[in-house]
Amino acid sequence: MSQDRISPMHGIDTVALDWALRMADPARADWDAFTDWLEADPGHAERYDRAAATLLDAEEALAAYPEVETPVEPEPIWRSPLRWIGGAVAAALVGVIGVTAWQDRPQPYAVETAAGETRQVPLSNGSTVTLAGLSRIELDRAEPRRAVLSRGEALFQVRHDARQPFTVQAGSLALVDLGTVFDVRLGQQTRVAVAEGAVMVDPKGAALRLDAGQAVTVDGHRLLRADMPPDEVGGWREGRLAFDGAPLGMVAQDMSRFLPRPVTVAPAIAARPFRGTIDLDAVRRDPAVLGPLMDVRVRRAASGWMLEPRE
Image 1 (cartoon, rainbow, N blue to C red):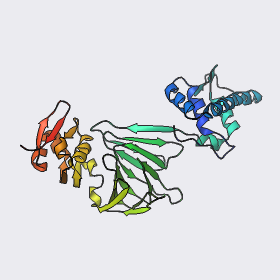
Image 2 (image 1 turned 90 degrees about the vertical axis):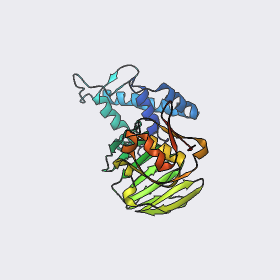
Image 3 (image 1 turned 180 degrees about the vertical axis):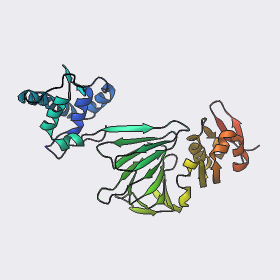
């Protein structure tokens, strides 16, 4: 669920209403998540009861307007505790709470990818997110200009709107687009790199502007800015990974998103810096190519490949 909020229209508690709708539908009910939400705040139970009462008000509103005809075979959109509720009651519910409040209720969803998979996610505002392997992004149809990257890496191609900027939350780092194509990577180090336009990093804190050809890496509480050729931003889509002094442990973590078997690094060399470009297709064909490139020994391990010091 997205964070709690109350719609400015009619003071509707859209979060509680969304829970009421979800829990009334056996196909959508998530009792574990619902219990967690109830236990998170003593006031949530009362809010849920009010939302459930709103749904009953919708049924009463339908009964008060006999001219609203229910189709002979209505397609159910959610189930009340006692009966199937069709499109006519949904219309009455919209009448009770207001069209804007209904549209503004949270409609969260998430998209995930498996190792070696990439996936393009079109958004309703004309923007596009391309996910690398082993990545997860959280979105909300009620907030189409906001995204949360919770794992992995994603390339954002944003249709800019100065009146309503596109925002991304990547771990603890907040980003605001300024007309942009940019890449965000989470891992041992969070990195943001811009291919086109500009991005505002940490707008309520450092307010650091990144233009095309620039990148920033989060190092503890510091933001370290560096140059990065724009054509290398999102290069993983063409099968290239470029690094400029990244520790081998992070390089292995990045490669593992694009390979069918993970790559790990022996602790003795995990912090060793690596500079160079990796051809992912060549690694897929024969991981041994990493040996001369990184000056390591590549050993087949139980679950994947291990990079070790040369003997």
